[in-house]
Structure formats: C-alpha cells, structure tokens
Image 1 (cartoon, rainbow, N blue to C red):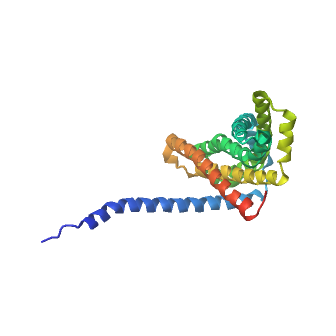
Image 2: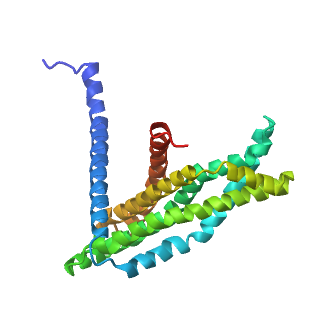
Image 3: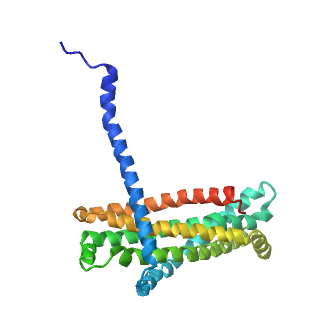
Length: 278
C-alpha cells in the first residue's frame, strides 16, 4: 500500500520550480557580470591599439556631446530652478534662506549635475547605442564585419566608449553651470533675493574637491552607459527580430539608470566616507 505524500513533501514539490527559477536568474546575472567585465577589459585594451580610428571617435563625440547639449542645458536649468525654489522654502523655516546659494551650489556640483546628465544620456544615448547595435546584429551586419576580419569591438564599441567617457564630464559641467544659473534666476525672480549675494554664496561653497568628485562620477557614469548600451546591443539574437531590438533597448535604459544610482552610492561612500573628501 503506497503512502500518501506528507504536507512537507507537497510543499517542497511546489517550491522546487521557484527555486530553479531563482537559480536560473542568479546564474544569468553572474554570466552577465562576467560578459560585461570581459567587454570592458577588451574595450580598454583595444582603445590603445592602432589604428586609433579618429574619424569614428570624432563622429561619436559630435553625436553624443554636441547633439545632446540642448537637452542637457534645459534639464540643468530647470533642475536648478526647482532646487532653489524648494531649498528656499525649506531653509526659510530655519531662518537660513540666505544660504540657498550655497545649497544649490553644493547640490548641483556634487550630485544633481552628474546624476541628471547621466540619466538624460542614459535615456537618449544609451538607448540609441543599443538600438543601433541591436539592429546591426539582427540584420547580420556584425557577422559581416567579422567575415571581413574587422573586430566589432574595435570598430563599434571603442569609439562609443571613448566618446561617452569624454563627453559626459564636459556635459556635466555645462549642466552644473546651468543649474546654478537657474537657481539664481528663480530666487531673484520669485523671492527678490540679490543676485550677487546668491552667486557669492554659491562660489563660497564651491570647492575644487567637489568639482573633482563631480568629474569622477561623470566619467564612471559615461563608461557605464556606453558599456551597458553596447552589451545590450550585442546580446540580441538575429531570430528575435524587431521585437528583440525593442526589448533590449528598453532594458538598456533601465539598466543604465539603475547602474548609475548604484555607482553613485558606492562612489559617495568611497570618496566621502573612506577617503574623507569634502
């Protein structure tokens, strides 16, 4: 006579599919981290090998940097306005509204300048890189490059990686200046604060170490956006077709933004807590 399965055995049988699914997700995550690490190392090594492909790099600098400048300036300007407006009302409760210039300066230089610029470029440039490379993958253009003895990483990834790494700190500086300018316009126009006093406060709280931290963050964000965009573009399969291109493009933007926030946390802990920078 066969025994009936106990409640514990039945629960274990129900949990096995979920455990297998979790294990598969963890395995895929580890594989992805390994593939991204290999892509980064290969890209950095190939960046210093001839030919340097300056024409491709300049083209990407134009597409990524110059064409993104208007949206970065607008984003920085209105971010500074919002920051100054909210900061003024909060500081007024403490009778410290005179320090709003320093508040805007510190926030724009150390955090919002790099973050806002990186998020904007993750949505604009990261998704564009992924869509372009994924389309080439689906239409087998990348396979054609390999047949012609052309390294796809050297030809496609390196120019985009260098352009993102170089241009994101530059765009961050523009966004920071526009943020402080927007904050000044907001407090002068809405709260009748003296503009010169606001700018003096902003300059008093702006240190070279803060600008250095901002550039470090922007460089790391640029490297992350380019790497994730290229990796997602290469990860699509030709059989996935247009639907696959759409999925990896969406996934690229989401992954880039999450990675930016994670990198920002660890860099803040490293630079401020461990290294003690101001």
